[in-house]
Image 1 (tube, rainbow, N blue to C red):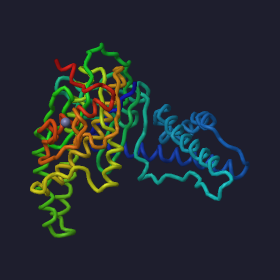
Image 2 (cartoon, helix red, strand yellow):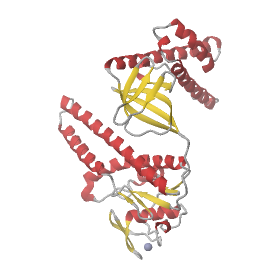
Image 3 (tube, rainbow, N blue to C red):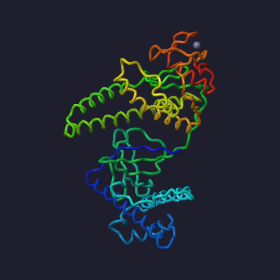
Length: 392
Ligand SMILES: [Zn+2]
């Protein structure tokens, strides 16, 4: 099983210069290889393969020792492969469009400012030194040097590839590792999981994971910055500065949230054999079709809007992290249809009232915890019974 870790890199000034040159040289190689394919097709109706192009690399490198010759051979092969992938997709589109009037665009040259990444095979032109006891991690790339990397979380598995990537003014290293999937032993616990606004999640056997505190703090800071940005004069330096702060705040929130999701998912996967969840893609569709599901109370409108958008962004991510972890551990994940899980009583199926966000009232069973009721409905839909038995 493969995992990718995207980590911020901090090249020193001269390293950054060389990294920019690396991207430019690879872009040139990419475009030259594209030109060759294009010409061969136009002039002789011949298609050139990845193998043909890779075989020419040696000559190209020998002819240009100060340019292409300086770079990692295998990384150059990866760039040629990347072009090959583009062509495979192009030929597929051509095949699909046969007989129809649809025109399929021929692969285009890449402008060098848009060519933003180079893939290296670890141990061949690139190497990785993990962070160690508070020391920085480092990634070394041929023709660039040993670059400082902020490794914000532990990594598992053997490092297979290292990708150097530029996004605007930032640099990243994407480390892909491979792990043997470890099968966990059976726990006898199977639960439905409800994700919510008031709490992060509730399981059908009564476990509650609260929203982490950093969400509140981040929400206040983001709301504050947004207000200040709106008051700042359009086009002013101050507004630009606030926009940058705001982007930084969202990014920081995203990182923290991802860590939290990984931790929470890891714990659930370690303690449950089967996990039932709402299929949130369906939920998203239901939401757009009907305007909104379960609108939060009006008195919290402004804050709830932002709060909701902060949480919403998280649920699909959490679900996919949880599903991936479960799969690699040999656990079962069941996705159920999301409609009415919180509003129908889990015990008798009667339609409940919802006087407040956190409570539903069944005409037969009285007041119920809304999230717990939801989790139990999810467990039932997944065929796990009420999902409560294992709590004992
Ligand atoms: Zn009931």
